[in-house]
Image 1 (cartoon, rainbow, N blue to C red):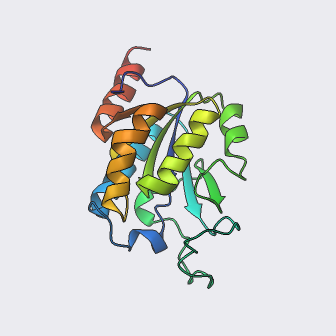
Image 2: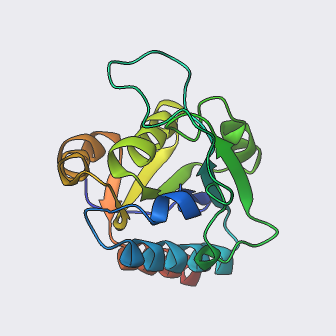
Length: 190
């Protein structure tokens, strides 16, 4: 569904833009994703809206047919958020150990305590961390918006599938600029 509205209490959730992940090869240039995520974070902060910065520091413990790439500990600095996000003291920090940012964290409670009704989700990887977080947000009753030019995946087919088949069932999609324009219009109309 095309982007129609930004709720008065909307939060930005930035998924896994951290040192160990942004260096991986991606379907779309990571520099563009980072630039757009930063533009959204700056806009949300300017409008006094919450910014959630999420990193991943592990994985769910269950058995799968395709085991994790490695069971070795992450190298030093791997989980550190990238400096380009311009982390601020008021930002909400979440460390996850699953694909989605809501599972096994207090993110839902923290956002609901702030009266948040909508989330805008960006980051890496489209078909795992972003999609899982969007699914969980939708299931928790948040209106979901996905900034399609502020996300990518290491697997082009996963990125494309999420955009075409999954995201339209979970919420609305739009570009970084469309979201910023709606934030500005909402503020101008108050």
